[in-house]
Image (cartoon, rainbow over all chains, first blue to last red; front, side, top):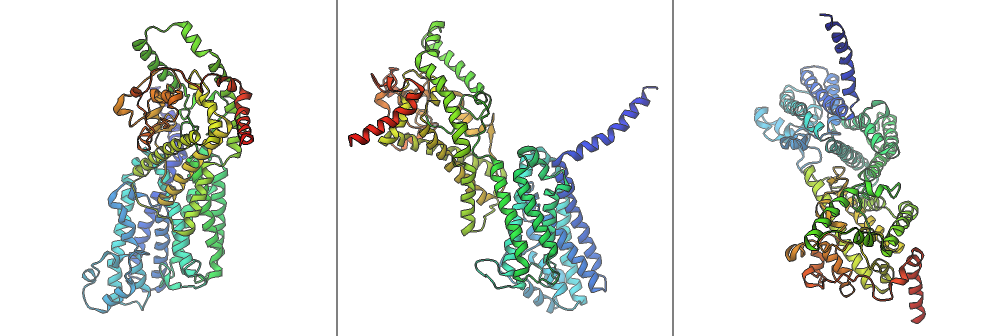
Length: 328
Length: 302
């Protein structure tokens, strides 16, 4: 029996050692602490909004939606589930129809609300049950019982998708960790894609910073114009990037970049991201996407994208692997 | 391409003379020789590996390495720079596409594009080195070898090294820039032993026999698709120097009318530029300077 005492002691000691080792793995950390964690948070935020629909306080309902918008931004910034599960490719579109299709969702929802058909029947299209539709039905007019019934159907749909995403990530953890190079490139791709879309769709096109609408601010083009929750969504995108690249959030993408390629390339991305976060935090609350207020964030995100590209190109190492570039 | 010492060229699978490829080539050569010629004698081996051309190739191999380390890598345009130019250029007049292809399809397409376009550009630059009278002065250096061994591959004038490095930077940079524009960061390269998958499979294990006297043919059918060691040796024959410019694919030669199957060429192994020409290139300094003298003479004559 004596052997059990030292053996148990060793086992007891090794438990924290093992869990420490697992936490040190940057790939597992990215998956568990960023991707899965943010998806789970979005489910919680969505359930909170479902509860808040019964609240008589406008502020409670508004705050619940803003929180969900931010959680959604955090999920979308690193959304990679579609690459592991074909069905999951369209989940983001089923949650948010922003920048997809030409239909004016607000007009359609208002038309449906003014009729007397059942909400579950009226909201037959998926685009009528997305974040944009919730923004419209909850905040474009006074809160009524009929709007609440519509919102319940819409929020239930969005919550179901977030649950599918959370469950999907749980099911695909092993696949992500089986091919970490693939997983990492998917994460970085999601980061670059949504940094670009945030800069161009969510800031430049609204504040008048694109070639097509230079100087003409159009707040009505923002993602959630009635609740003004678009800014929270943008914050969510930036926060996920900070989770993935920030010095204090390691082990993360930056940890892997340090190990593989040194600090130079990724430091430029981190610096640009820090500047973007600072610009985001320093933007006045009542900015309403005014051009001058948006320039620092816009420029910060543009710098992040460029630095990311520079890092990416050097990371791929295109000059290598060609078996001698000489002639014959 | 990170080169620390000349020795590293033997240790990394992305180089032609990686030890693994050399061993496989040696085994193929031994089997081929025993089957076609007979036993291998020590004196013949000594004559082959220690003749004047071979010794010059060993010396020049070091010069080639030094030139790349000192001038090509730090100074010359890199593929990374070209990739960023292309990417910025494309981004300036269009939004990134972020096409939703499958990851494995993107990686396969990228690996294949680098391989195919790289090989096509090598074909055309090699052909240009032969057809342009000024460039031929520099490429003569490579064809001056009368005995071929794997290190003859490195007998290239610095001007040719620069041209091929620029070719590599342009092709790899353009392909990478376009792929990042289309697919974002979901980019990777399928590699084996550190080299491009397709090059390693189709080329590397017999690549070292191209500059040898082992006339290994792939047969008339396959020699229309892939350049065999025998076909490259045919290219080193004086009468066939304007044939078989390809590196991996013979398809380019077939398409553009420069293909010569090994069965259609003479079996002699008299390589080089012809009688009396070898002396012009029989030392490291001569290799470096002779093309410039020839060009100067041509100018004066004109």
